[in-house]
Image: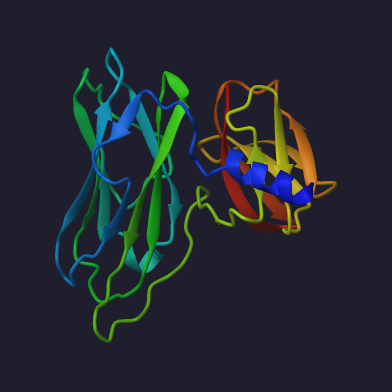
Length: 241
């Protein structure tokens, strides 16, 4: 029975992957392998197609970033309206996308001078008028400059520490209850944060499986932060509908 429940959990839960996305689709692969040249300058675009019968309003924000401070100010992320130096962790908005039109998220580097490493950034993207339509874009960066030091580290409140086999939340999206299965992770506290990273409410984690009543929450996208004492264990995203 435990094995069956674990399989069901895996089927139900996938980070930031929600069913019935009829708002937008990906023209390009949403997982991009970025291999910039040392001291070079390249851009990598992921085009998004409006699948709706009217205009599309998209929002986005950075949620995962392992580009350390030694690479700050050496890359940018752009939507179809603005460019932002480094990865913004506050919600940004596309200009309206017409019926059948495309827009893009662009990752651009300005050299990565003198550093080597394998950082990853992830961008959460959603239709502001249909919160069940939500997905992610991932840029896996590989930069190898001969003799250069490694550059690694976690940044921002939006950092997602991934352990998909050890921590599950379901159903997702949900309207009233959120089941949190900590599995093999030791968790003592669960916090719900809004998209700006502000804590809304805390729950003690009494057991491996916890049921949170979120019926009172306003509709929207939230982070679930799991702590062991004062140490961050993982962060997941869920949608209240």
